[in-house]
Length: 195
Image (cartoon, rainbow, N blue to C red; front, side, top):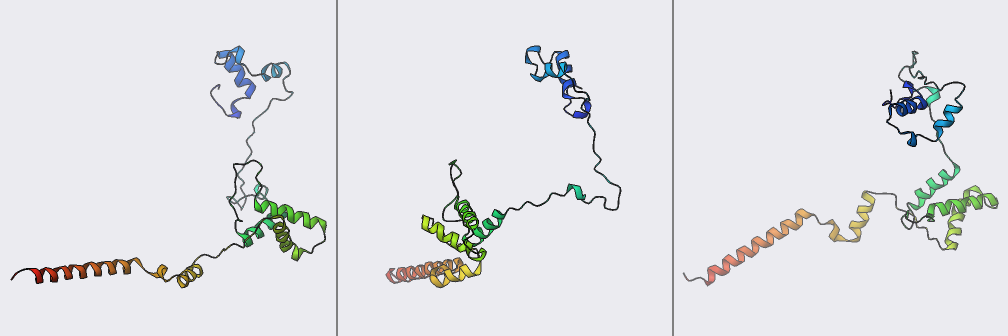
């Protein structure tokens, strides 16, 4: 019983009491609360009661309604989501080594709530006005590129033709050049060698 850590085999008091009796815990190392609990025991002993998680209804195996955890969304989360959608991650990375670091997104949310509380702006223009207010403070927000894939590749290819060259083409050119050099050297040695 003393080695068990399960509540159903005794209370913490009975387990510590048994450890003290057996000498595993010395009297000088007993917990602070032990004497208080011994002097003033609870009116009802704590009892471990296993709650029944299985139900024998038609929805057996499905999650019960009382176990469902509700989604927690704050209004700031919607602002953050829109910020990251428009501006990607912001102009600089997060520096979590500093305790007083405030991210660009957090600054944006704080300024957004300030402007929203003032009530002088409409809901539709609030996001853009917040960006302008941060720009006035010196925080530069650049619109992020969220699209990845062919559009970026096409732009890179049209910008620089070297990026469109394939590795196989390069190797073929090198192989062709080396075989041409080999043939030239054979012709040269044939001309210079006495016959």
